[in-house]
Amino acid sequence: MVAAARAFVGTPYRHQASTPGAGCDCLGLLRGVWRTLYGAEPMVVPPYRADRRDPGNASALKDAAERFLLPVEGPPAAGQVVLFSLGSDAPRHCAILVSPTRFIHAQERLGVVEANLTEGWGRRIWGRFAFPPVSSATSDH
Image 1 (cartoon, rainbow, N blue to C red):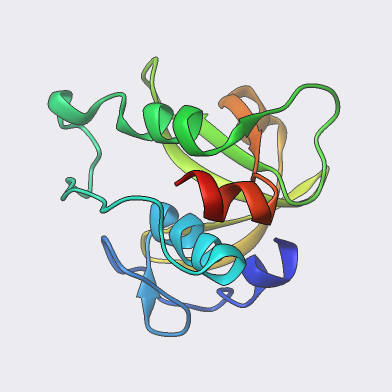
Image 2 (spheres, rainbow, N blue to C red; image 1 turned 120 degrees about the vertical axis):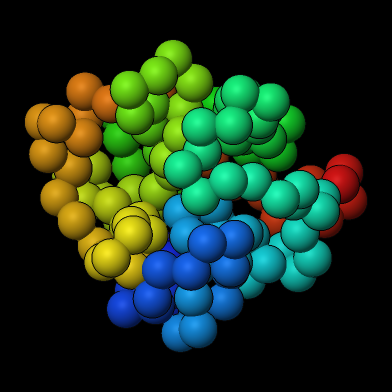
């Protein structure tokens, strides 16, 4: 997971894209890593607004994480998916941990970067998830 996520570092930010080197947003990073690990994506992602303030899709990120990923407890670890709430109850941003204190995410104007999991980011963590084992992800979805 970490190597697949690091392949995106330096990719420009592009809303709804998911291609390393060409462009992606935060969800696109997860989609691209998923394709690296499992081949096809588990579902077609419906269009969504860049500002993620569409009330009709407020729970879409949470719902997809709960459907396709495995919730984790305990200490943060490399390879985990982190969902962040950004001023709302529902998560609106996602990233992949590369260590307990660093993560990779796509951010407007910055593109895909590796960053420190600062106290500010830590306060925004909504939940952490693991990618499923390769055999179950390809056979169940």
